[in-house]
Amino acid sequence: MNSLTKSVPDRSRMHRRDNPAQLDWPKGLLLTMSPPQILFLLDGTLFVVAVAAWLVPITGLPLHEWLGLALSAIILVHVVFQWNWLASALKRLVKPGAWRLRVNVVVNSSLFAAAIIAIYSGAMISEVALPEIGLVPAVNPTWAHVHGISNLLMAFLLGLHIAINWRWITGVARRLGAMRHFGPSRLGSSGRDPQTSAPEGEL
Image (cartoon, rainbow, N blue to C red; front, side, top):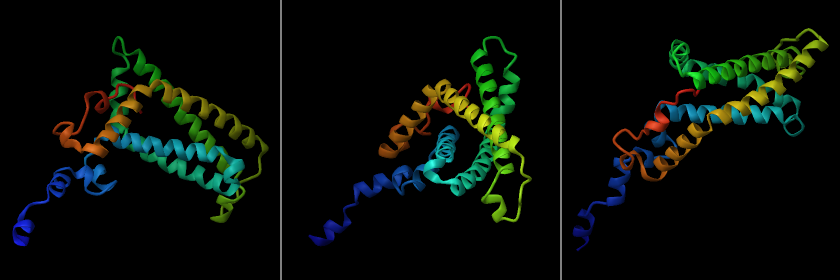
């Protein structure tokens, strides 16, 4: 009786083996994610770090400065990851009816510029992070004003960026939630969704 019991396969383990998303969270899920879903997690990380950097009264100045430097690295990874989309978007800008794409490109480009200015101006007034690595920026009160204005502009453009892409964001979030619970086999052979795999204006 015991030998018969041991020979019966564990259906739950077999199901988990057939669904990488359920093998090892989050490693299994990452193996089944599409590029837009990876972009979603990258954007989410970027958003959390940016918001934490703005909460200076809570984080304190040292952490604020280090988060700003980390933000520059995440932005670089984001741009590299989306380089093909950027090249494709520039080619499609002249096509009739691509107004949403044009708006998104303008917002995204402005957001990128505001973020770069905010990070650079922040480095120019650094009191903790840069001095700790042996770099002492020149004191110039103008950079403090530039830093404040660029941060406000960055916050506004980030909110606008989220509003424009809200449908894409919620679609990818639902897809990730479904993959977490059911695995890609319940969602199709590739685990992708036409509404979340090719957003027209997402950056």
